[in-house]
Length: 104
Figure 1: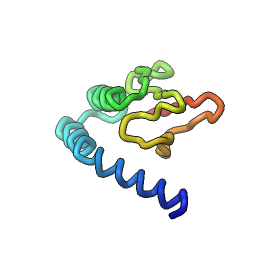
Figure 2 (figure 1 turned 90 degrees about the horizontal axis):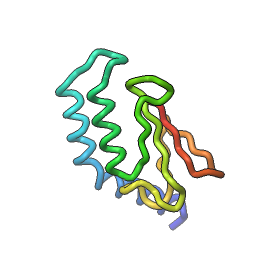
Figure 3 (figure 1 turned 30 degrees about the horizontal axis):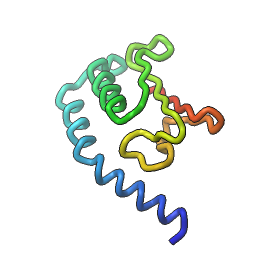
């Protein structure tokens, strides 16, 4: 088994573990629609979820009420994410600092 195969299995296992929580969060958001660019409740629920999974969440990033910035320390990945940093398309990571940032 290659390291890539191992990583794929880790990601799939994490997805299986997190699926019920993410499904519930998705249904909660969709049950309470908000006007575009004013998704205050959805943003709060997402920030709470991410904080519960080990991310440090800075709310109102860049002065935008519906934006947040995420960070964590290398060597201590967020809960459920395996031993490496998540690779979400909206996430950037500085290898030197181990800091991730995402604006949603």
